[in-house]
Length: 195
Image (tube, rainbow, N blue to C red; front, top):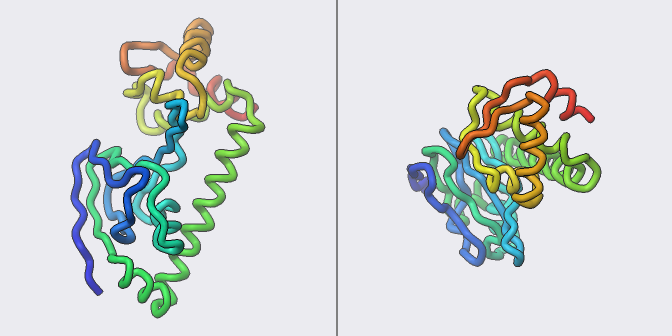
């Protein structure tokens, strides 16, 4: 089966709305961020693809023969390969291990979507913002992110994010800088995230 190498720098747009799907991406290193933008210009992060994950946009396009409805951008430098559509379908039909791994990854991704819907529809904003800050700051306290970026992470507006960040800073939970946020009290943020 043909495998085409995929090597991209951070910031590379891999797909965007209206583009046809060129094949199934098997990611070996890096992260792809998948977003959707509404007609009002508001962007929301749907999910991130890391090694072992599946991109539901790509999966849906390959299974339904439709074009992309969202945008995928290399959030970090990425390395992997692309399995052309015909080879993807053959491997799906003939390779039980591949099929089981793929369907398991699709099931996990649907769980992520359920969590996104729960967060947006049923969770208070401070909890959503705290979860986003803790997720983005998993490995370090200083997060390179703009207020607009946090609005996309939390499916909200930039002005509202700015007001809540100012309140978090007033309470000593974070420190706001230009293009970054520093986490000061992970424990308190964790309690807010659980609400």
